[in-house]
Image (cartoon, rainbow, N blue to C red):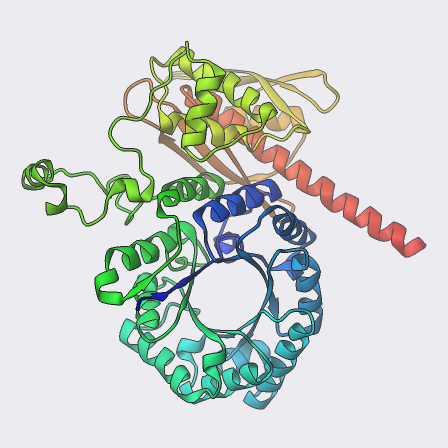
Length: 521
């Protein structure tokens, strides 16, 4: 009889640790809803001790998402565990996930503790978490580089204190698949009472083997696999869940396992994470990449036309990729048709959001003969990040540029006071001129750290989608926008990033004021 593999999604926690990513609270909640539709078993919603914003996002997810277990991460520190419980306590099924370093190098140089101290810290942390909930996961960090017998010892301590999930993490992506399988088997064979818990694996991709190591751990006996959508995460990322899930589904004949994942939601989940993270998928990304189901070779084309299975081992409809031509919308399409198509793509805006999306859709439709799914996703990506209380709104941008003369940009913005503000600037290029002009209007200083532009669709009338990141006062803020005119898209993306910076600093100031007021009481 086939065994179920539990899917633990950490896109909102480990995924957000990708350099340059900072999800907003609304984005986290929307991704959690998509993970609910995907039917993942566990959502690690964040690391509550890191920030008030993370705690607020986790709390909202716990209130609004039903079905999956909602986990909060905590160091083996009492205050972290207390904070984690406060964040997840309203979940339908809450979990506290406790971790501590377990390799010699990390214990000596990061924790500055010996083995005995670390075991006792782990024991105390699991016991404290159990006072709040019966669902406690324990992770000995960097387990693949740690002494195998020490991993048995520390996992034994966690089991003795009531841990219900034991996670074996390949934190640095160091393991080789055969090694990972052996490490899991070693734990399962030597930890007494391990049958009372579920064994998990959490693999990183530093050597490009996160998916392989996750499956190897499963073959070694693990029944929970942790990873992220699109494989985003610290350094080279995590195990890519769409790859893990489709490998289990496609090779059930060999593995003898299954998941409860609704795989037809994988494509929507992948595109949502791509939009919100700003990390574009490579075309040949396994399972969900643009080229995953495209054939160039004449031999392959001939085979697929005769029988799909000759050169495809998965069906695109099983992943949720639209078959054939997407439903095309034009400038004469109404809002009802737009809402229906968005629903097909897994997007369910409220009436206010739909009105905003529809206005942007009409602007694009006026510039293009047809608006397809990729255009819609770009529009939604931009419009869903626009907050009702945006401080600045771009009203006009005009650029003069060429190979003779200095690039010049004029901008007009609607400010927080509701008034029009205009200015102009000269730059080394048209985008530089636009950004300098916007800075003159807003009076905000920042550093542009990343700028990328890509074509949303094919053809000369394609929208250009611009993604930028700025650094200001130690924070990194992302902006995205799409428009047939890439200079307009560049300006809107920049304004969005500035607004996110302003909003973040406003929230921080409000928290400081509240804390100061509490201190006076």
